Amino acid sequence: MNKANFVILAAGKGTRMRSAMPKVLHKLAGRSMLGHVVDAVDSLGKAKKIIVTGHGAEQVEAAFQNNTTQFVQQAEQLGTGHAVQQAEPTLDDDATVIVLYGDVPLIRAKTIEKILDVVSSTTMGLLTIHLDDPQGYGRIVRGSGGVIEAIVEQKDATSDELSITEVNTGVMSLKAEHLRAWLPKITNNNAQGEYYLTDLIAIARKHGVEIISINPESATEVEGVNNRVQLSQLERAHQKQLAEALMVSGTSLADPERFDQRGELIAGTDNFIDVNCVFVGKVSIGSGVTIGPNCHITDSVIGDGVQILPNTIIESSVVGDRAVIGPFARLRPGTELASDTKIGNFVETKKALVGKGSKINHLSYVGDAELGEEVNIGAGTITCNYDGVNKHKTSLADKVFIGSNSTLVAPINVDKGGFVAAGSTVTSKVPKDSLAVGRAKQRNIDGWKRPTKKGKED
Ligand code: UD1
Ligand code: CA
Image (cartoon, rainbow, N blue to C red; front, side):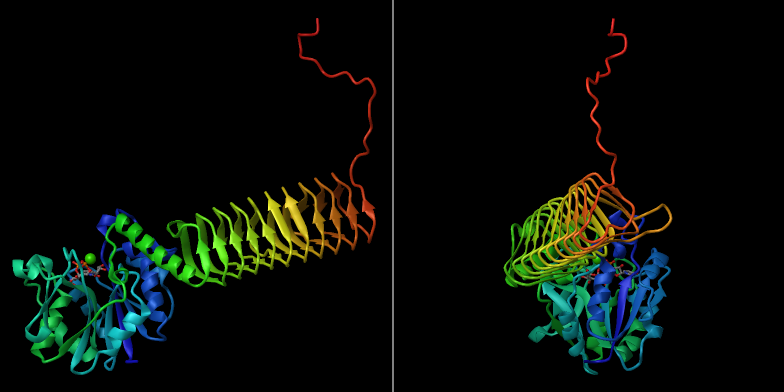
């Protein structure tokens, strides 16, 4: 691979987004548009990245603060050529420069690699595409023998040139030394009074450098975003590609149009995902998993044969094989379910280690807790983990049974086989195989007279 310097243009205002946030920070699939471009570049290995900022520069720079990114500011947006000029002093002499756009988010690493590899001292690369409707784009002018001679912007084009359907995507690559020599030759003598980066093509031809065109694998790679409608269309196109990749790898989707992946999703085979599920961050699911409708899963590991019933929320958790979760369950960060566990409806867990075969079936809160194997938690059980200042731990050994509507005031231990009677408030240790009854004893009052409504008595 040629030594690469990437210049990512992100100075534009994005007026049509109608937003206080700079356009390139708007999200697609849960990641900012500029973030997608940066990720594609980073996936190719270490390379210098220079982001040209302008509108909302502080916000953009704050979002990408790390030692592998450099910023240059373009105070006034005088055109794409002018934008690249701002980055010129930071370029390495021996590098190949690739220009990318922060508002063209889905460019693939493979395509970037291709356009990088065609550059030599006598060649430069240009990413072009044929569009049925080339409206608005710069047109690729080819001369005799199909040689690329120039790019003509829509507003400067003759009617003959307007009928050209091969367009400039904006992505180009060339030797830093060529860029340095040619940038000063760009003028703003055109319909828009801008310094067009695209003028480099005609200049390159004058110097006998050949322009090699590369095509993207799919049109979504080079689609830019100017407003929220286009952003949503690109989001759907991207989601469709992700959904198709998932299906091809062996997971069925009830409806690929109602699937959302906002991060990395790794899945085995023979899984079924129902409609309206959202996967965020790093999620891996095993094989033979079914996920009901309306589930939201973030940064979690799901084992084999797991059933996730509708409307379940899982965050930063680990779910063991054959667990059954939901409907309407919420696993909060630090939940680790061993295999064959059950978490039922309206159960919330947090920092809870749940041993093999244990069940929390209904209406419970289990937080800061460690449960052994085959523990049964009755409906409505609450671990009181917080005393208003500190968090405390609940430890339940193997085969513990907690009766319904119990309150476990932590710190607390229930030893192996311990049994808590329904409705108990338990505040101290329950020894092995013993029964804890922590509630007022029932008394029955004979001939109890019910209260009557005031004023009705006589
Ligand atoms: C540009 C190309 C056009 C191509 C099209 C593809 C030029 C002159 N034209 O046109 O051939 O078909 O992209 O989408 O290059 N930007 C800056 N500073 C500036 C101007 C622009 O950072 O001074 C950034 C914008 O934020 C944007 C990108 O450069 O990310 C492209 O600018 P834009 O004005 O949208 O160019 P187009 O007119 O679409
Ligand atoms: Ca544009």
